[in-house]
Amino acid sequence: MRLVGILTGEEGDPVALENAAAQGRVILVCEHASRSLPKALGTLGLSDEALASHIAWDPGALGVARLMALQLDAALVFQRFSRLAYDCNRPPESPAAMPEKSEIFEVPGNAGLDQAARDARTEALYLPFRDSLSRLVKSRIAADRAPVIVTIHTFTPVYFGKPRAVEIGIVHDSDSRLADAMLAAAGRTPGGYDIRRNEPYGPEDGVTHTLKEHGLANAIANVMVEVRNDLVREEAGQRAVAGYLADLLVEGLTSPQVR
Ligand SMILES: [Zn+2]
Image 1 (cartoon, helix red, strand yellow):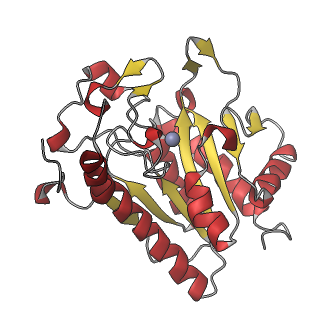
Image 2 (cartoon, protein in one colour):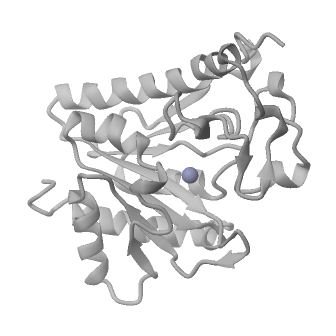
């Protein structure tokens, strides 16, 4: 099957940019916002249950990111298609960009993709996302706006059958300035969440691609936030978490390291 041009015109742009004219420093990113699959990919051979699960998207992440965008007057960039079609937090050469297996689910439609099929998905889904975010970051830097990148993710409360206690992960690669500042702010805010550094994932898990590509490469502060998805299934939970994270960012951004 030839997959060049896997998106039809009706499916629209794979990348969405909201609040482009925002005045705040924060650029919010949501690589796993959607569970929609391009029509050309069908169901990838997956059940409805699998396609509704965390392997297809980060449930609640877009809701949290949108609420944070309002509170922080931040721009928001997100991918409109499922990470199973292309995981925008992975580079094209990574097998995890089009995973053949995700947690306990085999993904038949991703098995044995040839280079042409991989290139078609990369061109249709990843490159527009990467380029849109890159343009935004570079335009903010050029305007001396001191941008910072904050990516918003959610994770499953039970992974390979094991419950996870951590509620919010503050994840960083080699630039920990913003993570340090947010964790310090969290330490001054009693009654918050079980919040931890580089849990449940860290750079060794390959989850910091966006941070490296757009944060480290531009020498601007950056952080990835992981929220346990049972906390943000409903709007009330999304509001609570978004408010908490926005407060940590507002306070964190006053730190001399990221000012
Ligand atoms: Zn994610």
